[in-house]
Image (cartoon, rainbow, N blue to C red; front, side, top):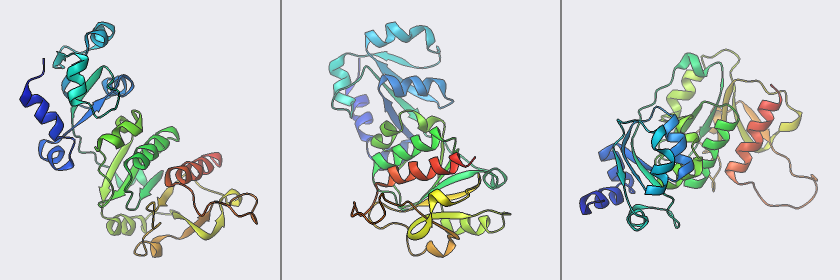
Length: 255
């Protein structure tokens, strides 16, 4: 049974301020919790209906604090319109990266991504295409926002997301051998005609403004995703997560 204080605590961490103070976030739904249980993230509390417990109890570690709750109690803490049997509170993880690691691989760089659904989807895309590291500007939406976590469909437990100072990151990249910073621009080269390597930064800009003027000078390879047919009037732009998927797919097609 959930106490009033526990309900209050859980509802408080739906806000970034309190997630940061408590250094935790929450995960809900069978699919996400299943992925969580396979990861090395630390679960501080697990709340589940009798139905879920009966089906999964044999797979649970005895060290995980488990509380059986009713569907009504789940409704009081869920952020979903239709609560889904299980809810976990998880400790935030400080994830580091190695310069030697990123200089030989592809990474995604995200400039001021504001929409949580887009960030979550891009994390899922990175996971699909084997891209281990995503670098976000510090103004981007919080990784542990409930909508971000939900949109990742579990990829958040495998993909490393870092909030960094781009100036420092790009200056470090200048010392890497044969390492490019790619960005998408209307005046860029047709991505389908380029010979794309398996290392570098793929930079994507904000949903409404694209890549900030401050970072454009650091981009030494401009790419363009052409519409079809070229002379046909279409939408002005692609959704940022759709564009990211196309770019990542094209890089991997060249592998």
